[in-house]
Amino acid sequence: MTDPTAITTVLAEHGVHVPALQVQHAGPDGTIYRFDVDARDAVPTWERLRPLADKTGYYPVVCHDEQGTLAELAEFNEGSATDTLRIADGIVAAEWFEARAADEPELYGEVELGEWEPTEPQTGWSVPFDVLSGKPVDGVWIAFVPTTDPWKVLAYLRYGGWNECPASEEHVAVQRDWHERFGAELVCVSGDVVEMRVARPPTDREAAVALAREQFLYSGGDLVYQGYETLNRLAASLVGAEYWYFWWD
Image 1 (cartoon, one colour):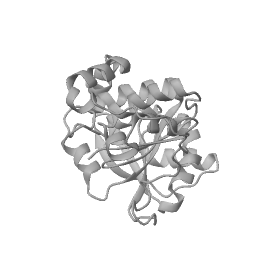
Image 2 (cartoon, helix red, strand yellow):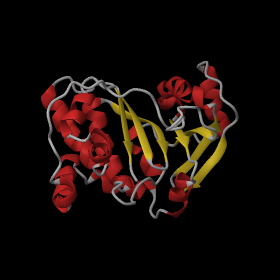
Image 3 (spheres, helix red, strand yellow):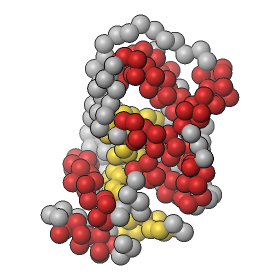
């Protein structure tokens, strides 16, 4: 399905009405469409759209791009989504985590385990809101990406590859693994933030600690060094958590 009118027609047939879709980015792997949305309605709208991805052939994602980073990545990052997905097929997430830790022992080798402290899971969504005031921001939209698999979305957005932010194919491999194990799927993305909904979060300490180590590596260390301070505090926050948040400087 490539006609934006056909997408909105299918949605309307299932009781979901959205404005006319505009082209966000046209590339060799298909067109990404968008419509603007009030920040307060962004995630609730996503929740109505998500079950219809298999019918439209497009996965929805809430976007905000205040600095223009998403547009720059889509425009200037080389390679197609097809190429990225092919490379990702050869990446085993567990091996990637091990290699990332081994490649930069000075960054990843000295993380403090810390004491186990019961920590409330993080909740809420940050992309549609100002990080300091919590107020809704302008310029939020929902993109329709030409895939039905949430873990493929960042390949189409050509997301990643700066500083400690993983390359697009690495995002794909990790998110594919987490989708299979935990039912994690992308909901929101901005120029430096990725937010995910989680259907089957870890429920015990051992699984949470193992996942915390993975998230520490995926986030380039920021979740611990600029957030929870110790690996165990991060792990405790993941027990039963239905929301995951990542950012990269």
